[in-house]
Structures are given as C-alpha cells and as structure tokens.
Amino acid sequence: MSNNKILHPEVLWAQRSNELYITINVTDCKEPKINVTENKISFEGKSGPEQSLYGFELEFHKDIKPETAKRSTTPRNIFLVLEKAEQKQDYWPRLQKDKKKIPFLKTDFSKWKDEDEDEDEGGPDPTGGMDFSNLMGEGSDSALDDSDEDMPGLETVDDTTKINDSTKEESSEISEESKSEEKEIKSEEKEIKSEEKEIKSEEKEIKNEEKEIKSEESKK
Image (cartoon, rainbow, N blue to C red; front, side, top):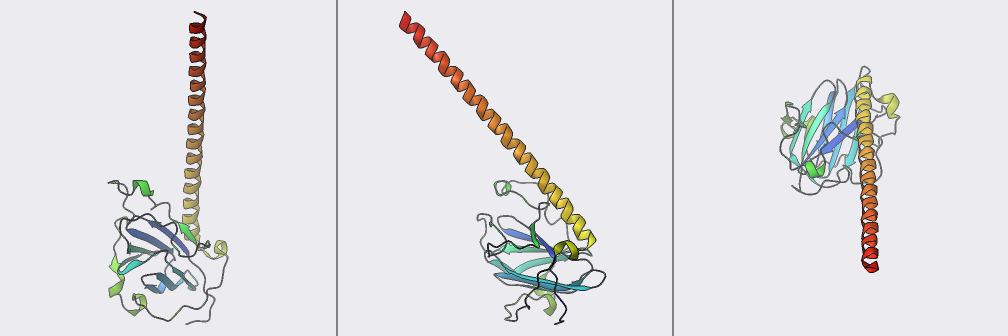
C-alpha cells in the first residue's frame, strides 16, 4: 500500500426496513477496493484529477448480507445496495455501530424515506434504474471476504478542502433540501401549537357558558 495520506471521501447513506443505500462520492475512481463483510465495510481508491488516495472503514450498526451486495459505478460516485440481515425490522438509528459522529458520513435525503412511509406502495426508486453488478463476482479488488488484513489508520482531513467540486455541489444541494425540510417541520409545529391554543380557548368558552347556564338555573 502507498504511504500517501489517505483522504476521506464523502459518504451518503439512506435505508429502508430491508436495505441500505450507500453512495461513495469519488470522481473517476481508479482501482477501487471495496470489502464488505457481515458487520463492516472498507473502501480504498484513487480519485480526482490528481488521483489522490481515498479510503475509510466503519462497522455497521447491525449485520448485513454481504453475499447479496450490489454495486453501480459512475464517473461521479460508487453506489452500493446492501441487504439487512434482519428483514422488516425497525429502522437503524445510524449506519455505524459507534454513536460517535463521523464527519464524512451524511444522510442521503434524496433517497431517504421515513419509516412510517416505508410500507407504502409507489414513490421514487432509490436505485434510479442503475445498472448493478454483484460484488461477489468482481474479482479480488472488490471481493467480499473476511480477510484479517486491516486498512491502515485514516488521517483526519478537512472535508471542505478535499471533496472535489462536483461533490461539493451535491452536498450543498442536499444541505439546502435538509434546511427546507426543517423549515417545513417547524412551520407545521407552529400550526399545531396554534390549533391547540384555539382548542383550549374554545374549551374555556364552553366552560364559561356552562357556568352561566348553571347560574341561571340556580336563580330560577
């Protein structure tokens, strides 16, 4: 392995009750090495105009089925579909086992679907009609095995200076979508609170009317 500093690529993820969708944003990636086991994923490859070395490794929150893993490669990224070992269970709270936040790992809002909507029919296809190949049949560079060979420690890098221009644009779009969704949620919360106030006000008026009726009855 080269002694060059290993940079972290931007990694996006989304899920359904039975699958995980992982996008590794690396442009013109050369010699990608992807290793997926039941509880871990590791990646290494050269990317960008200078063919810098990128890589990462993380443990999954729960087990997956490596034998069914699929990959689609484009000039802009590598997209993986991984099947969860436990089907039709609750959504994972995070992709990684460790609760510690990983700077280069982000939620893919373009492919995300809320858990209460997961069973609904229809909706956009997260795979987007991509062409997939099975990782098990792609040779040693992307073989899924339980090799004990670990990747060297990855040095922390500044994502804002290392992600290529196209990746930054995609990240910015996702960030804007996230902010828009947060604004909509806050707006809905305000409307709910306003409705609750109106209901309480109406309840007070009803109680006052009842008191007046009782008062009149007592006078009679």
